[in-house]
Length: 429
Length: 180
Image (cartoon, rainbow over all chains, first blue to last red; front, side, top):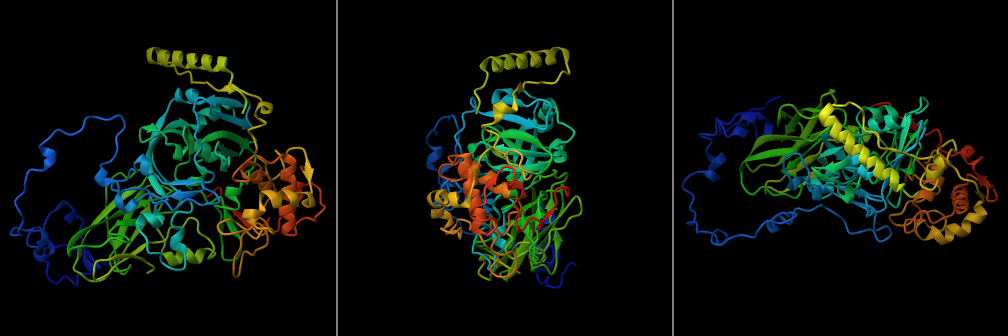
């Protein structure tokens, strides 16, 4: 699988796959001595003007603040949001700028949004959560009540079922990694296990589904099977340590680990135990996957095994030849990420990217691999494998499974083409 | 929503405080239980869930003929006079799930009539959700079904016959809920 035939000059660079992919050990800066032109940009002899003491080192800075903001020089790092829809201003989505971030945690201000009737402004003192239906005793909880229950924290990804739907379209859009795949975020969520509250209400034996609704204008509803609800679902109250943001369901949301984002109902106000799925609009009309024969898959809950290179990625430009770090994110709704392979030649050869050990279940994984770019064209791809052995499919394999009208659960391999000028573009390859 | 019982909330808060203190001192394993009992009757205004078997449908009835007036006033501007949809707003009637172009509508795609009642009552019209009366919702549901030829113009839709409405795509879905 390794192709070392093109190894013309940098004999000390350990090439692991075609078109310049280098061994993970180069991530540590090892064995670069004698690499010559590959690292010329950093070697001695470059002319640089003398450094002067900057103005901010000659005066005291501003004092502490109550709630911090990013540097004004980093103000360009924003969610990617289209102009509001004139018909339904509260609808729509904003995307996380994945290509501008590092690590795996999404800052709360940059967590993606998808709303169906806008963000309600909820006073937690007046908000109520009720549990009813097939229970021994219907119950009502205040926000204060929930704060007094035992809590747990988990780092978990959240992905909209419609994320990357644009990648299923007929032509490759000129867009960024965040623009295409940014209905994806990852945070530390803290809250109360749903099973704790269900135990208090007393689930009746005939119950098999849990319907949840939100307190937004659409009273959005979704159903999940009771077995999942009892396994690991919780009511999230905190996001990265602070109360969850209004866009994420303040004061409380359902959190259903690993499953399509829409089931993690925001502004949660009702949990109803039922003996069948409610078949809400968002689990029939939407968030179902049409097949080529006109049948449709319903209740496809776990998000697929998936990865995307976030740098270099669409609309970026490589400004020098030499070693670049290829990095990106991988995740699976069915376990932890075990392996990410990277290709620089459109999938002809692959090399294992570096992953930190002990990857978390149902969280994002950050992968990295050094790459020597010598000015030639390249097509960068990544392919994830999860702990259950699921392997991310190619775009063609994904598309052939579904009707051309389907835009949900896309998890095909993403291709970024690098031109001889260093321009990176979304392509179908 | 029903008004919270302030006294029981205060009481619940006190119990919570006592429990957390005693668990520190005694490592008591008594679970926190702060839910306030309510009756289903108290939840009738906020529980809008309508199930495919008709559970949750309110009293009332309506025909497509009656629904046309409501539809023309409340729905047509966005969904089109005959449910054909407008830019960015889904079509409601007609359509096919194979061939070209594929058009998934309430008429061609949705498996249960209950979903129309549930969704229209909780979420439509988007500028004033929950402003239609239960009777108006029956009327509009009947009209939307009629636009796809699923019920006659004078069919009286009510809680007992709505679950029996034969949606064209009722057998079109493959349940994957246990593939977790």
